[in-house]
Image (tube, rainbow, N blue to C red; front, side, top):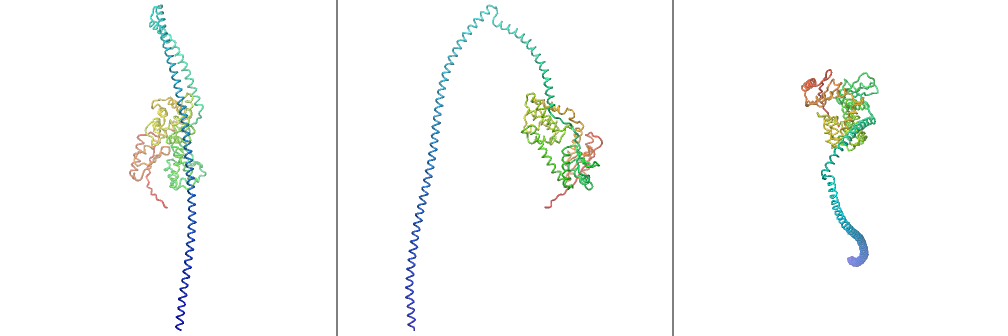
Length: 511
């Protein structure tokens, strides 16, 4: 039994060693096969790479040859251009040499002719002396004495003829100038459309029904008071059916109040906070409208290149009046008259029209210093780089400065024509507006005053002050001081009520 087991074990060991040897041979064969496959694959890859490198080399060679060909072509073109320039230069050089030879020949010819002329001149001078000597011997006078006698006689005759001729020319010029001046002025007036002055201190705001009047007045009148305080316009709500009257001497304020009322009534929300918001928005719209009116006026008249500030001042003329005459219409009328008159007189019509449009800009400044409007307008024109002729015409159209150009008297004449025609101006309205403006400016000069509004046709002055700068006692004292100053320095009908408004506001935003 034991021997059997030992024999079996020995057989297993011998069989395993034989299997291992076989397995090892199989592995060697497999390895050799993989190595051969790898070598063959590497050879294929090597050949492919060599082919790719050759192709790349051929491409680079072709590109290099193409670049060389282009460079050679450019060099050939440049060489051809140089040759052409050389040929042209040689031709010019030959032409210049030929012209030099021609000039030299001409110079030689001129020299010979000049020598001949000098010889003939000397011969003529000698003959002239001989003739003078013969004439002196015959007349018994020297040449200088005869010359003086002849000159004296000619002087007397010339003076007599010249005086009569000058008198005739002057008489004819006076008659012609008077007739021509009348023709130019009349023709200029006839060719410009005119407008008449209208009363412009009241604006009527139409409403759909009288129920809206109660909403505009508000509870205990708070809405109408807020609207009057924000705009500076007196709002009259009476028994007039479907109408509210806006009264103020300043047309800009009336326009702001009218537009604000229109928006409030259309929107339906009418309360103090909303009123202030709408008024501020409308004021911005009016400022934009002023600029647009200025631009449109300049385009209509063909006046180009105006400074933006001058355009804004021209737009402000729409809301100003001169003795009841609309200032913008007056300036347009003067500009057209100036252009026509300058054309008839043979002057620069565009320059005359420009000066005519700007001649009254001193009436609509932002700060309004104590200067005549002509001088102020001239300074504004100089500030915004207008031509000296335009500046002089603006400053001298009321004789504040000396006229130095021909355009200046045209501006003066056309301004007088536009203002003096029938229906152009109203003296009463202008003095009334000036009085209300002086009243507001007088109160505005006090410290702490924010806004001033003259309402009720100048019978009441409302003064709005800052609560942080003016106390209640100061408000009472301020009202008394303003009333005393107006009483001492101004002339007015009836009495003026001074109302000082001081309020404190607290504003926060819920987000």
